[in-house]
Image (cartoon, rainbow, N blue to C red):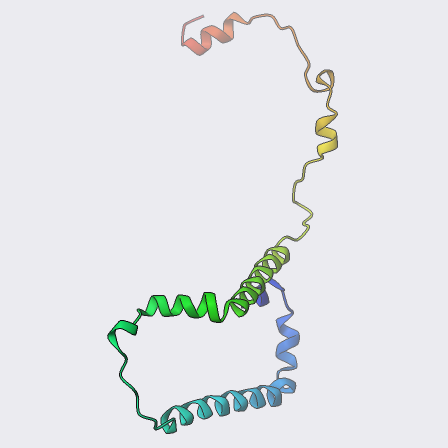
Length: 140
C-alpha cells in the first residue's frame, strides 16, 4: 500500500475505467472466498487420529520450537523472505527519491577546488563611535 501511494497514480483515470475492472475483482474475490472456505472445512473435518501425549522430558518451549523451525528447518525460506523484504525497502526508498527542481545539491569538485582569494575579501573600515554609543544606550 505504501508503494502504491508513492507511485502518484492518476485516480481520475482509474475511476473512469472502474467498471472495466469489476469482473477481475469479483473473480479474485471468489477465489479468496473459495480458498478460505477450503481451509476452514479441512480444519473442522480434519484428521481423527488420536493425539498422543507428549513426554515431559521431550517437551520444549514454544520459543525454542519456533527457533528450531525458523533457523533449522526453514532457514532457506527465511533468508529468501529477508532478501525480498530488503529489496522492497530499497525500492520504496528509491521511489521516494525524486529529482526535484527546488532541491539543493553540492558540487564537490567546486568545493575541493576553492581558492581563499575567491571566497573572502578583507575590508578596512573606520570605527563609527556614534553607532557604538547608540548600542550602549548612551546619549550623543
